[in-house]
Image 1 (cartoon, helix red, strand yellow):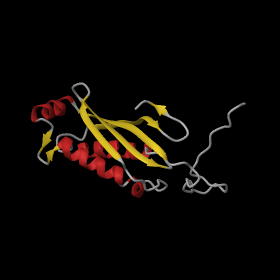
Image 2 (cartoon, one colour):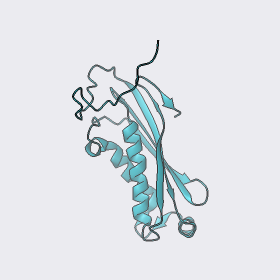
Image 3 (cartoon, helix red, strand yellow):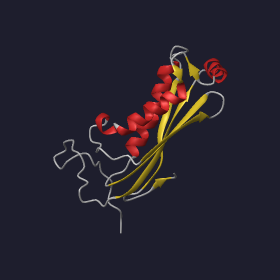
Length: 162
């Protein structure tokens, strides 16, 4: 049987924006993992390596982890049609990927009727923005991205890998 074409879920029958009604969905364990990268100019990266990722504002990684975690918990306040979700778990990892790039990964878990992809993406990108904020005194040539979903599990279909 041919698969029906996909359609946008946040649009009602009259074409207006609408929150998805998840009341009929089963409560299941759900998990998502996302990443965002921060690319530094070579001289800035060298300075950050030398300082142990500390800036005049404090510990860059610690501050970014706190900011990303806070963002995960407030995603529904930032993205208009995200449901408020109980967050069962949130982990943010930040490490160098080569000499000039910090890789930020955010994993989020919940038990609910809708997934946590947006929470994982929000956590990773807000952590990256926090790194930018803490390092912008060194350069405004810092580049964020790409930000992407690495995987999700739970709900109707699994995507990628966790």
